[in-house]
Amino acid sequence: MVHIPMVGDTSARRGGRKLNIDELTSEDFSAIVKRNPIAILPMGAVEEHGSHLPLGTDSFQCEEVVNRLAKEFGALVLPPIRYGDCRSTRNFPGTISLSFETLQAVVMDVLSELARNGISRVVVLSGHAGSGHMASLKLAAQRVAERHANMKIMVLSDYDIAYDLAGKEFPETDGHAGQIETSRMLAIRPDLVGAERPCGDSRPPRYMIVNDPERCFPSGVMGDSRDASAEKGKRIDDYIFTELSRIMTEDFGAQREKGDTSASDIGKEEESHGH
Picture 1 (cartoon, rainbow, N blue to C red):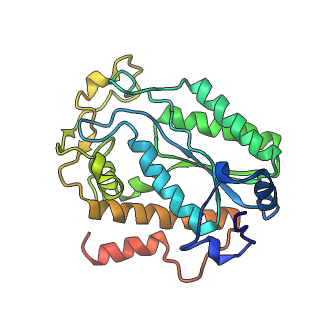
Picture 2: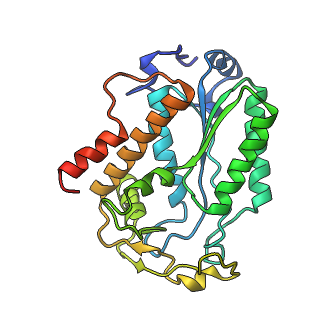
Picture 3: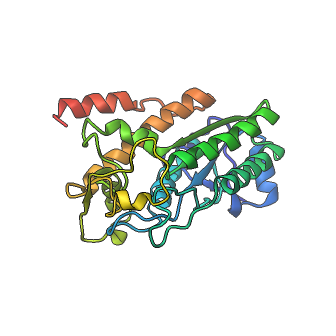
């Protein structure tokens, strides 16, 4: 049997344990659901990330954040879905993309099954932030929310938060496989990061529908990865974790320990140190 956290039980939060739903028994799950837990669905991708980062970069980053959030809130963690809708990188070797409709259907079914099982608070957190991919996730969540009025669903990418730092601590033009993403991977999976530090400053034309977007950024990189570091990656992940914890507390009324630092406070501290 696993320890089943009560609402407000701090042992399941900071420094506590996360609960992987696929490791629970049916009885454990049934008991935990009665405590109205938050469930987190990690979304990733198998996608090109330049010559220096692995195809699973989006998955690794997201799951690192999810593990920290789960320990903070005693949340249930669903098995990750490591495929997404990858349009701008689809023609690069190694990218495995789902269609918009397939992704929407899979996520809609998972969320519907959570609702059927009594889960009413869900975070869909995606490491892949492509516009079509995110639209598919949001539409799936919207359809489920319309059918289950008591269900609260958050849908976002960790890069919705990470890119708050672009134009501040990092170049405003930083993007796919650039300094932010390379730094995060150096912090969590340095064994998978290659020695090259490629750059790319071109992008597909704005508003144009193109069949070969990879021709517009042949390096597979949008940004400059040369100044990436594990230290920067840790600061980025701490910022994402702190800000997401604050949002979850506000949106779900989830309890957290006192004394947590808000993301805005982190920003002020960094400014005071000249970042």
